[in-house]
Length: 123
Image 1 (cartoon, rainbow, N blue to C red):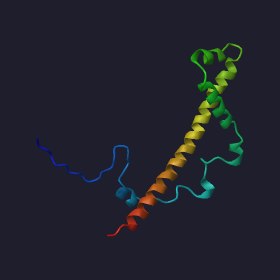
Image 2: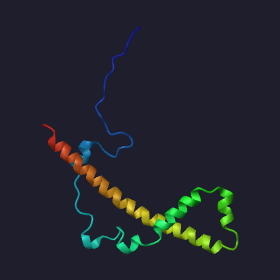
Image 3: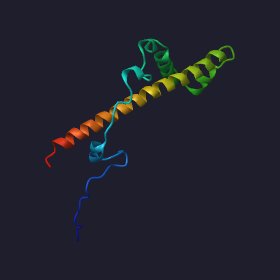
Image 4: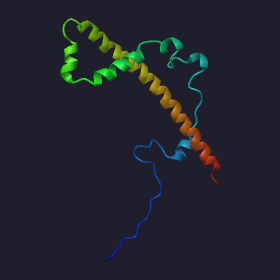
């Protein structure tokens, strides 16, 4: 019986990783906007809009079968249902913009964290 020696490869970025910690530590960034240029984050007025209601309606719809959802388009309420389709699209767009903002901030936190970790390593 022969055994092969196991050799370990140097750590590399995983397929799902965008970059290694070393590469992240080398990145730099500046503010994406000034406080008076913020347009994607919701204002207090936007928090009072129907997006959260649409989310609750989406949960209800996800709990229904296809025939049950089809029954909502009963001829009498078709206009309301088509409004809901449009409203859901607007809500998707709204939350996608929020997600982009969160993703960008998350990336900056990771870059800063990698930089701090790199700086604390002995040279």
